[in-house]
Length: 605
Image 1 (cartoon, helix red, strand yellow):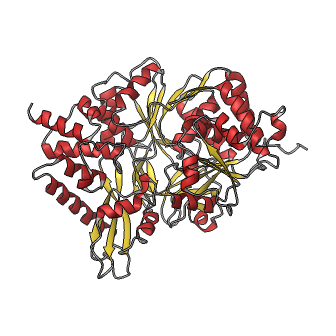
Image 2 (tube, helix red, strand yellow):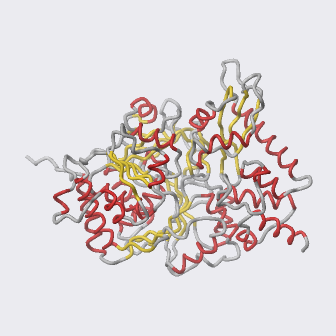
Image 3 (cartoon, rainbow, N blue to C red):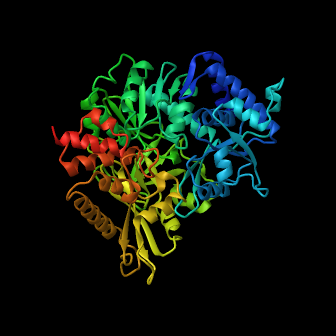
């Protein structure tokens, strides 16, 4: 009689793999940050020191640890050290407001919070009643963290590591919930290993890969396809230079200088690079570069084709969600699946297009995409009802509409659920509306998505004033949101209505609001375009009062002026003044004074 098969523990298998990479890679580059490089030898030392220190903090395996830091080096080191020690990292958005930080902490109930000093103060994390330890994080990486926590260099680091059974959950990934509270996706070590093995098959990542990944570390695309994938394959991840419109020339130059093999981006980034870098068409055609990886949002066929035509390199288009770790469908890099406009085929999982009853639909018919396989999440943390809504017999119902084309490749059609994806970030409008509903003078609030050429979709909020109260000002509404929501969750526009349009059953007529928002945006453009005015156009793009702007207004001192708003501003300047800026002119617009000067010069050409 054969003995039953003994399966290796996923956590132990995970640790053996990364320990082997640390041992084999020595002084090879692991990561390049703005403040300098981090070698594998440095990382091994840091993981050992922090792993020992976690035990000294009284942590046990499976304890949750929140990380809130603007410093990439500290965030990456902590994330990997926590994973290796059997703790459960929760990487939060360092731009979260105190209210959002509070919601995150209430949801995951951590044993320890590692946070920048400014976040500790702003969110009052040292409140005497807080049921967790607080360790301040700085730019010095592991040394600074260890010093703040009082961690010395133990003689036997392994002996001080957290004790206890293997953790059930490797990491929690937060998504904005359908209420004011977020949801946390539970990913296991088996999930992570399965995704990394899929990367090996789909992307052929190896020890020679050098990944340029500037995506935020609180998103799986920045974290899993960045430092975690680099460590798993003995590769390197590059997180410099920071992404901005003005920084596109430096980004393109870094591809050759750092011998980049893959540029990992979202469609909104590719659109900006294509416009601001069009005068450098050979920048990606280096001996080392393989291809661009695009995910996290729908990549339109026209934008895909333009990017490839401009730079002469292939784009691989992937589809996935945090609930399946990262990527599940792949259009490329092989020719059999790389059809522009498609999402290719699944790798390492099963994908079906189903009807509401769960029956698989034939090719050509539209239904919901269902994914099954080893990367499907364990569930939402301590949220059985939301988990039951999306997990059926171990398969995940994505809430996205797909069809399978005649050639067998999967195509994205639209979204079934209310979530929208704006510039690669998944936003749940209900959570934004619940914040706006608390604004004085607001009787009703409803948030929704509208098509946007720069972001794919943009978030708009409709507001109805309380009867008898003064009219609501969109700039005040934007300021109210900025004080309570992370920048990526602030609506880009506000629609003032007497009352929300509803049907006989009381359901909000979303398409009516989309239509009204589209007309209002067109009217606003017409108003500021007759005659066109740089500051008026900027006020509309940045969602701020025009009298708050001046020639010295820049992305660094103007709320709402991020890279995506920057690109929208440039395109609206072009439309308003009948111009077409060159790539050099685009990267030279760093203030409203620059914009006025460049517009004036272009009009006299």
